[in-house]
Length: 62
Image 1: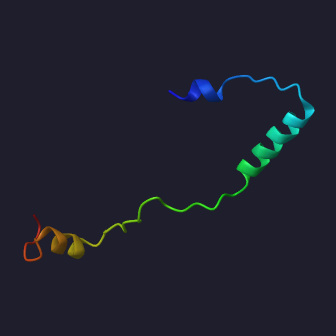
Image 2: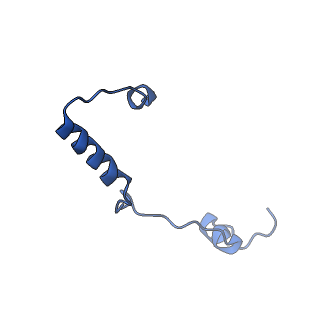
């Protein structure tokens, strides 16, 4: 698992690198603009639409 890499203790002694690290953490904590990598497929919850999709529009209670 990747948890070992995020639970590692680090020691930064250079003050400029500390500031850069804290700034990077602040930027990553802000709300990022995310775009889905794939198109979102809407969920079909209407029983009539599901039957139509499955080719069962004429069948009742199956």
